Image 1 (cartoon, rainbow, N blue to C red):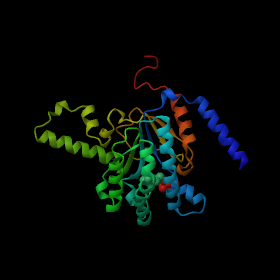
Image 2: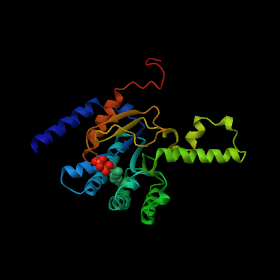
Image 3: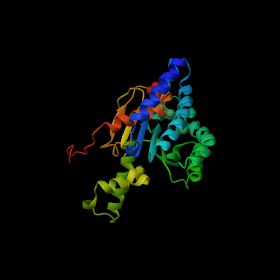
Image 4: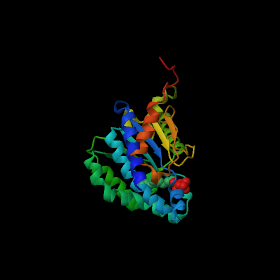
Length: 259
Ligand code: FPP
């Protein structure tokens, strides 16, 4: 135990020495994976991993806000997650209720504004209410945006954007020749994030190296990091380590290194 504490302290000190606070990524997106495996390793039901994962969301939100991150996007429930056993889906649907009922005062204290991407009309009434209340209760906050992807899928998002643009073309409001990347971006669910719509850094926990239908349009030039920890084991120090790795990368956006 003592050894573990010393290790954590050393890790924290090493991180603080290496981290460049002037170059914190504006938008960090996270695919929070590994809750089930975290629980199974401990002979606990899968939902225990989700419960612990919710605590990690709290820790990482505060850590990101303290570091000056502008947007933290978290993949909480995908359009494909409905395929899970109904008991697990039901549990996941309760989590936003539990999360916001205890955490909104902390969010307000840290000036964090809640936003959501995804079709929340398909969520249970109570869950929708919890999400809408959290958005309303943090509407005046102007610090970090905590952007939850709930019943979100990137292909669904792009399809909806295309439908809207197609309809506008049909109605004679848009000349198809004027459709450009900016117009598509403005029709994505991330448009509400303004200049920070595109993540600078995308992290996936638990060692899986997939994107799983998350922000496909927006991550065209994001730095990707696949880290081994399961989501419940991820914390503020893990976030700092990931940012240090990000700061060591050379982002060229298709240009040359020294341009
Ligand atoms: C993936 O792990 C995780 C999810 C599908 C759910 C993520 C949800 C949380 C972390 C809690 C969200 C909290 C709020 C406040 C909404 P998995 O179950 O696929 O893990 P596995 O790959 O090990 O099975």
